[in-house]
Length: 145
Image 1 (cartoon, rainbow, N blue to C red):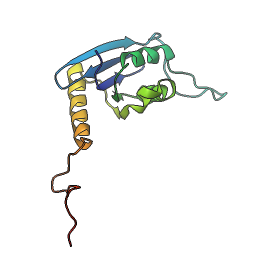
Image 2: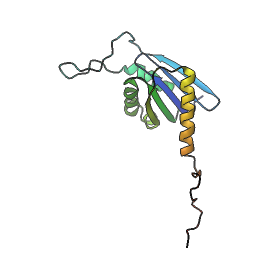
Image 3: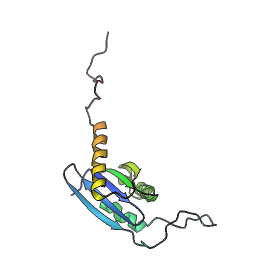
Image 4: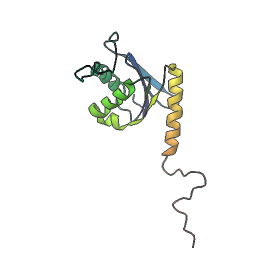
């Protein structure tokens, strides 16, 4: 089963991807393939990065998000931005669904899911068709003469 909302917590060792509703969820944990590699973003003397993102790892995380429409990506350091760029380049429909990329240290699974549910609940309220802000004029109101 696929869900409309997803959240991914990702670092260079593992990712956990949840697809969820307000009452249901499923998740998948994906581990990087070379977890013992030192990860540095410094450049060598030739200008090439010493570390490139694990494309196979990112591909498996993208597969865990298949069918979702809105994605929140969170995590420490730079891996979250690298994964967002990977989705935009290699999986454009998923990349277009990224609603935010945010910092998050190492929260528990329950904390990640609670945060994501609050995030999407607020986002959904902002874009609910026909919902007007309190005190805002509606489109069927006639202009003052």
